[in-house]
Length: 266
Image 1 (cartoon, rainbow, N blue to C red):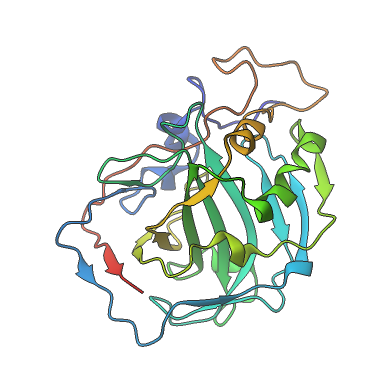
Image 2: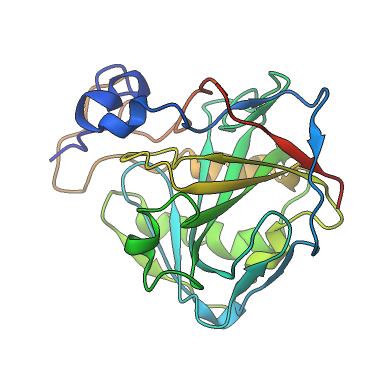
């Protein structure tokens, strides 16, 4: 069974709203961030995070990216634009067929080779991820741009498992502790705004925090991302423009509309 949505010509982002009405909403993500005349975020507390490396469980191929599930117990994201405590649920990645594209957010039109998303939910107000996803302050996603450069050793603990999840529906245990905090650029300022999930159902429940400084990963690591397939081992390869490979899995930017982006220099 092919996914009912994806990134090719037949089921790509411009078709999502047909099955997922919220994808046509006014507070959608990603956006192009234009860093001119942005209001400053005056936060009472600095954005802080804490993660338990041993709680990183497994990596899976849902057919459109790689995704790492996390036991959020003991993790904590607070401060900055957040009034409550958020815990980590999962992290995943978006990329492009070349290094000239792949990030979902853009800065003044500039695209990056990829974008890592650390997805958290509001554990102060809500009892589960699914409940939190129904509310505007339910989720907080940290966005980190990726650019080609040095090999990222912490990320390599994930990359070396990707050969085990080549096909949709496959998953592999993470054999060594992974610290998601090592993916967050230290001392980087960030942009924040109210938006949505960037994949269906595109619920408008996300406080976005997009870091200014990109994270370097190697060309070889990027190439491994592009070896994943969007179909399961039992299915026929779809004859799309990417020949069944997950070569390009980013949603194009959408209008900011009446929303406001704030900047924090940390």
